[in-house]
Length: 297
Length: 167
Image (tube, rainbow over all chains, first blue to last red; front, side, top):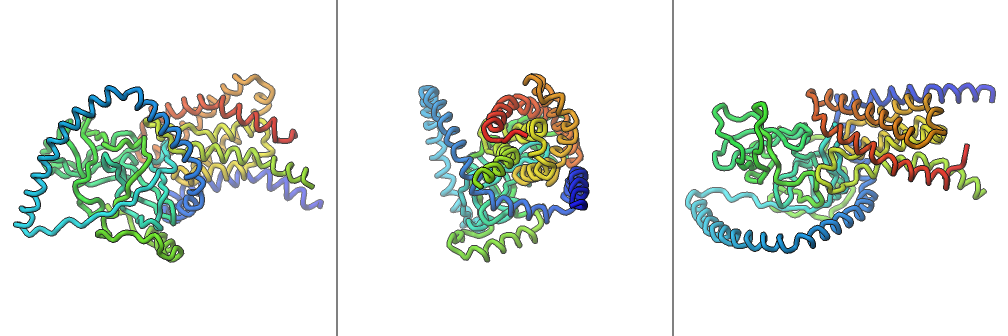
């Protein structure tokens, strides 16, 4: 008892410095060895994802209600706008159908290999994160649903980012705006190649353009397909600003208002994920994959 | 026996409420550009309990709350833990200035603390990125964190009065 008291007070006195030291060590180690921490993170995400999914449900419901109320107010003007859009899009549909037929014929003539077919997994965003460090979201699907590292995440509007960490039933998607994100892009039309590099701001930068580039404000960007990370031709965004020689790109997808994402299963060539596959084996494979696969350039 | 159980469960409330605040700060609210500036709700939790019941939010609990937030947000592991522990280091010696003061005084203290904490996170983030990050997002995050403090403090005060045994 006489011994126990000093030990307890020593423990209390040094708990704070020890824990502060531990935090600093973690921060430094995390910078050096990200794989171990990545694994810890995704195991944790797996464990809490059902809870996060449940808690984010009412939030999403309130969001939908607000959206609906806003929609009701804007009904008349929106209807007029939609009529106009519809007329315009119908014209485009005719054009696209014509082009699609023509494209198929020309491909046949050239004996071009067909594009690999693509499958999607739709999933809900259950947590997002910002602050000074990351731009990423956690989604409600993992290796069970066939997600794998490197797959593209898109919305109807365009590319959102890529899957970077995959657990059993949760995965983290690195957004285009994150400073660790770089995506090979092509300027629609001129086919100039460049990299879209995030810097944690809302608008990622366009870098490594060819020397005599003709890119200007208003140009559309699509994925170039270089490096085999993303399928070519996914819409990304539009060049909106040039400041200090840096081209800023506004993504089509509203990255700050993500609710559902589609994860594009590009590499699997149309093989649908099997939801009833043995879980344990799949899970451990998922983690092994996420450990062995280096992020593509 | 049951009274004793209730007693020990209530003693966990400061940790639990701070964890809940950490979870709330990563929920995907779909306000435009919200994610980048989401308030550091858990910081308010650490600040509140360090002032009013530091014995019930010991360093190890502060550390766990920080690690949980880091794991949820995808930030480098240990960053929030470090900030929360430093919060304790700074606030604990000053807590007697705050304990019986009016709320605006406490709020003012939190305003300074949040400024220091977010500036520290911004510096650390810039160091990790290798460039100075956008300061506007950090500033807005500070404003939102400070603005959300009255609501958070009110809820924690209700929890404390209703369930947490007095020292």
